[in-house]
Length: 327
Image 1: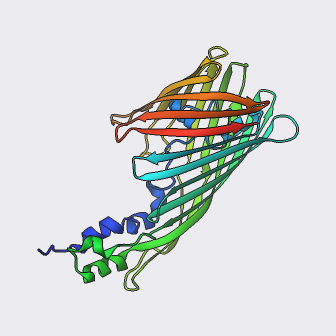
Image 2: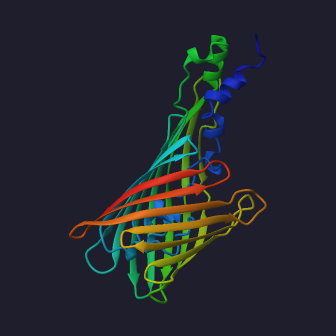
Image 3: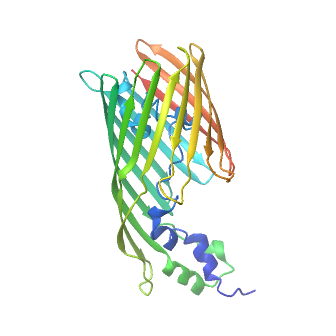
């Protein structure tokens, strides 16, 4: 049985990294998408900008790095929607002197169709009740390196497969990004935070088609969209913290988001968390999160933490597990 224009289907199946990803990639959510990194922040409903007091601060608000007191390193792996695997690692290193901390975060994701890698270098310091932070990011992406196993498409002629392969677009991209963070601590229990994410974030893309008779967009530059987030955290007691974040829409295509979370220490070694993310719209895009963690002191100043978060969302529920060591 023959199908007219069947090579179009082939392009969709194995050429998804072609023109859809190779052209205007940074303008769609598939490019360096923020799925929420760090198991603890996710367990608190993604509301962490006003708290940001651990190794995740490099990503969530670099000003919060100044609040860390120990060398801390954490790692987590996320299987997003059963399609994309994300690896996330973050380290915070207090510098000699008072209230100066360096942070490093690395994020990798994807496969041969679209692979992305980000490195974040953050610095935070505190003066009186004010903390300031800066994060500089390097991003790299490659796309269209996936290949076709002809034996999986025996219903198609070799000529149809060849035509689809020739139209496939491949290439790479690289760029820098800058985040600015600020935190205000009017009391020991209350803090406010502001994060300007990707204030400067140009990406240089290079693309070409596999077949000489086809054309891709070539080389061009686009900017990743910037975001502004506001947050606050309040220590209800020595064992409970509540957080609230607000992310206003920066373009007409985006929406406002309100996030809220809570964290409590039930016993000395056991943490519980819960939160929600709500879009201010008529869409079914709300999320609810639950989390827990174990905080163990192993020897002297060495501590090991294991955190778990479960995300309830419209597309598919997901989970995150992380391991953190501090000393």
